[in-house]
Length: 116
Image (cartoon, rainbow, N blue to C red):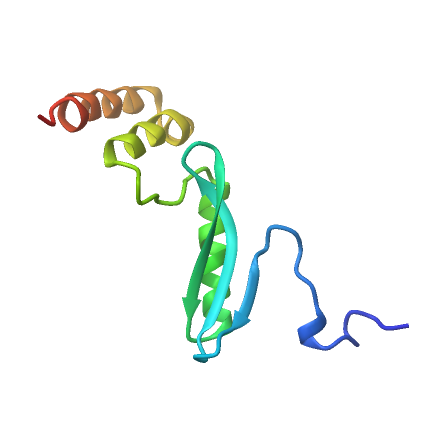
């Protein structure tokens, strides 16, 4: 019977939601995984690096940010939409109540409504 140590490195599997890491034909390493996107959807992102370890480290950082509730940037979203999402879903859990109230007021007054 084979144990995990007996299997070659290419045959080892990663856990669910850990992503995929492989070497491209141009000798760069690519890591791909799913992260939180605006609208409570998931988005597959691809990260590149010169070594396997560096690509995997960058991917794990993105997944950790996603697990904390920070969505991946979206090309079709606006700064105002992202800011309101952050204030309502992320900052409300990380800031004190008075700080959150001030941030919301400043964002609405100067960044969202003030744009004309």
